[in-house]
Amino acid sequence: MGYSNYTIVTLGSHSALQILKGAKDEGFKTAVVVTPDRIPLYKSYDNFIDQILEIQSWQDFPKIEKDLGSDFIIIPHGSFVAYLGMDENKKMKVPYFGNKKVLDWEEDRKMQRRWMEESGVKVPRRFRKGDKTDRPVIVKSYGAAGGKGYFTARNQKELDEKLKTFSEERFMVQEYVIGVPVYFHFFYSPLTHKVELMSVDKRYETNVDSLGRIPAKNQRGLNIEPSFEVVANIPMAVRESMVAVAVEMAQRVIKTSQKLIGPKGLFGPFCLETIVTSSEEIYVIEISARIVAGTNCFINGSPYTYLLYDEPMSTGRRIAREIKNAIKQNKLKEVLD
Ligand code: AMP
Ligand code: AMP
Image (tube, rainbow, N blue to C red):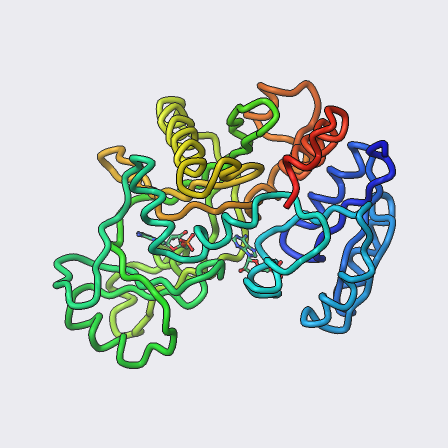
């Protein structure tokens, strides 16, 4: 079957517009699964969205999934685990771009930490239950939550107090690294065995990114707690010396995934979320094993994709290109789960 007979489908949220625009540019048919409130948005892009599949709520996704044939290919993004849950993701029968085994390694913070450590990347110190914290920490719950529900504590006493009223069961306490966040987006192709740097962003998080607007002396007494909810993403061009380090880290992360997760390992889009300190150390705070929303800044390509492609290449389009190449080379199975 030629690639133009396939339909690329995703959930209407997160980076769906980018994914579907990319799929259309590569010659695929496209479909989006949406809840009623979002139909006007996706309808307004009928130039590249062929089919709108309505469900009443995200919980109804399995009902519609049954009707999608083997000519549909689903592209997961940040909302899949957040809205459908882990089990639903694993149970999906529609051909799925990516390796579902990676989901466990991404979701479980301890497994992810092992993956990062074995990749030889610098990670913030972790404090286990019973450890004495001797520096500021950040407490992170599990799952892709876009920074929601994180909190910080300056010392052990503050940590103990805040944990008393914390309702999450699964979380990790990590050293709070003082520096700037830099998110590197990559794509690993199992067909060419190459890691491509796609783009770089930083997040615009409320309220941490606005705390500096009010001098510390005016903040005194306001009792502001920092929070890290992502609102938007901002494009970046990074010092080339740091790009060199990041690309090497990404290659090691891929190699290690093939050892830990199985021969296929991690492939397709992924992101190294880092904090860069004033001594130019790059700490990896998280591996996102999927397309991240920061790539939405680059639907028309980035400075880095311009170096590799003579046409606008978003991460969404790169995914579609990989599927197209796999079909042409009779290797579609290698990129689907
Ligand atoms: P939304 O597309 O706004 O419905 O977001 C769906 C989920 O994706 C959210 O609950 C977050 O977990 C995650 N998310 C959304 N936007 C971003 C972003 N810019 N960066 C990282 N995660 C995000
Ligand atoms: P994450 O969900 O891991 O991508 O983290 C969301 C945000 O929390 C980041 O963009 C940072 O602003 C902040 N953050 C997370 N972990 C750390 C850390 N170890 N040190 C400093 N800031 C952090």
